[in-house]
Amino acid sequence: MAAATERRIATPTPAGSPGEVLRVFLKLGLTSFGGPIAHIGYFREELVVRRRWIEEAAYSDLVALCQFLPGPASSQVGFSLGLIRAGYWGGLAAWTGFTLPSAILLLAFAYGAGMLVGPLGSGMIHGLKLVAVAIVAQAVWGMARTLCPDRQRASIGCAAAVIMLFSTSFAAQIGTIGMGGVAGFFLCRGSAPVITAPLGTSVSRRAGMICLSIFFLLLALLPLLARSSPGVALFDAFYRSGALVFGGGHVVLPLLARAFVVPGWVNQDAFLAGYGAAQAVPGPLFTFAAFLGAVAGPSPRGIAGAVVGLAGIFLPGFLVLLGTLPFWDAFRRRIGAQAVMRGVNAAVVGLLGAALYNPLWTNAIHLPADLALALVGFVLLTAWRVPPIVVVVLGALGGAALSSLQN
Image (cartoon, rainbow, N blue to C red; front, side, top):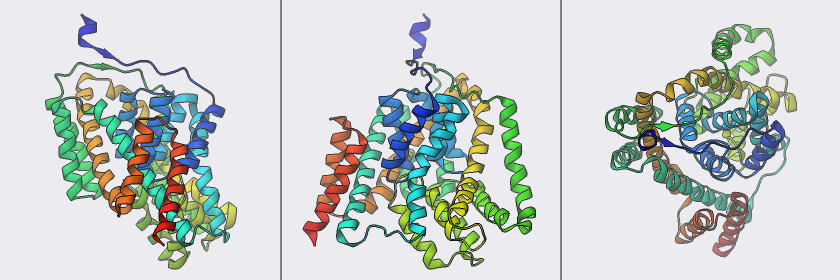
């Protein structure tokens, strides 16, 4: 009888080592172009579908949690996956592998290394944007089949997409996710309960409370200590930006502009040049902090400043995440909470679908040839199961070829 009322999901593969996590996320850090939405698609394909480190339902719940928290959502998801796989050192290894490639490239740009220029370079960058369209389309396709299998959840996902197509503000995003949870509570309670394995993060409630306390303590004390040292002032500027940003990615840019351009620590031309370089590298956009830390007025500058920038901007999001995970695991296993999460997950699919159109589609698909290249990437990923790194290379080469034909 229990088998008729419960749907069980296969248990993930056994835990691994920090070295394994570092290798996997280093590859993702070298190939994950397209921003946080595309990163979530890369993670799902590599770690949920191929390696089965975590269940689909648990992964979706994790993504939904990170959407609510301040900080870089894709990096928080990656950190959590490393934490689940290999403990605290695994979380650190995941963050290091995913962050290091783009941080090194932006540090090199800060020292004057040239970025891709000219028609060929621009074409390669455009090809990578088209790959991002294919990656997100694959994620939407796969997640919709799993998370919107009935008319109730399909309707919630559709409603979420429609709302986000007319408003892309952070308030609308949070409101849409909340709407999905409320709709799920009333419409999805009749579904069979899903018995999912615990996330297995090994973060105790005591450790979670300590992390939350540190988060708020630093947020209150750093502004008071900023006058004591230029290095503390620099760290404070990054920490406040990372702690107060909701939505991640591009949302952090206005905060960083106020923290660095307004007081004259970085001139506007340099700020915009670094932002442009950040668009051309894989990995999280928050590694823009490596560039800013290297060129900012207060010492330390250079490599030391880049390290301060990366630590300052990522730390608050990870503290909040560690503080929330122990309570999240218990919450999501309640029957009523599962109904809420079904609605939230369906709404997240709608958000991804809307984001596939804007900003990805609108910024990448301009000509029939662009659509053709994106479709080829989508088919390679979904039908031929080609590894994403191969599609990334082919997309860059295809974009360069299209650019040369058009000039």
